[in-house]
Amino acid sequence: MKDRKDLAMHIVILDGGSTNPGDVSWAPLRALGSVTVYDSTKPEEIVERAKNAEAVILNRNVISREIMQKLPKLRFIGLLATGYNTVDVKAAGELGITVCNVPLYCVETVAQQAFALLLELCNHTEKISAATRGGDWDKARTMSHSTHPLFELYGKTLGIVGFGHIGQTVAKLGAALGMKILVYSRTKRELPERYQWAELDALFKNADVVSLHCPLTDETRGLVNAERLNLMKPTAFLINTARGAVVDEAALAEALNSGRIAGAGLDVLVHEPPKKDDPLLTAQNCIVTPHIAWASRDARARLIKTVAENLKAFRNGTPQNVVS
Image (cartoon, rainbow, N blue to C red; front, side):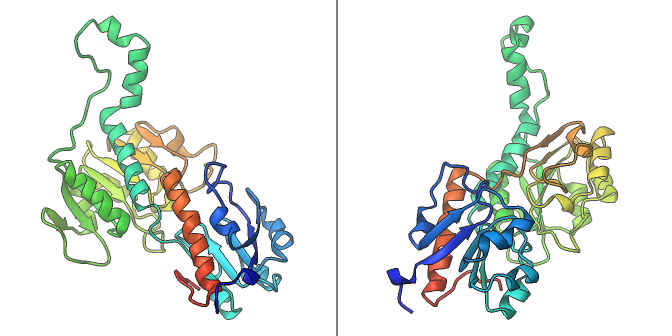
């Protein structure tokens, strides 16, 4: 099938607000057809909004078999994400609907956020800056003054749980800072020099920093529980830029508040947005960011570009990044 203007499609973007709050362009998708963009869509609004769409683009909205059966024109679902648990891909395949995701678009930016969280725990930059601007340094009247202890990463051990592209990138950043690298993964491969494989409990016991980069599955849900937190050094940090439910939040809050571990940096929680009583929102030495590790402007522009490339490839009869 040739790529021709007369193959322009009716495209509906159900929840484009987080991907594009206005600072990037939908132009790559607009080049492929008529595009209707909704910042967000309630579940009960999906069918009405997408009833004439041949292509539906989404991030967090859930598309079930029942919904697909009510959209007779639908031929393509494009995910503004790598994960595809929001779409019943089995049903899509049976109904002749192609579902495509976007792998690898945010590897570097997620790794950067993991280290932003870690470095804030180590250097307390924001807290020390606030104290300095509030006059604390002037009151001390010393050449160098710090309100919080600083933690050096050189020579320390970084434990990576999950060794996909993001985990590998985080490991490289740690190695560049002179850290020793321990790796736990279901899939083993040849490791670079200075990296070592470790069993999961051994990794938690020996690492000064544990950084989570595993998918959420039945096996990884609650992987970081009270027992594993009790294995960690009292000086250790936990970083989670994976999925919130990998961590038992109550157990982590208890470990932080009791001083069992030194701190945590989290970009993901079990409930997003969190419930008001989420124990991690008030836990000691806990930094929480609102699921933004993926969301640099560069990464979001790559995301839109690849979604458009996925749709164009589908339209040309050579679909790519297919998960259905």
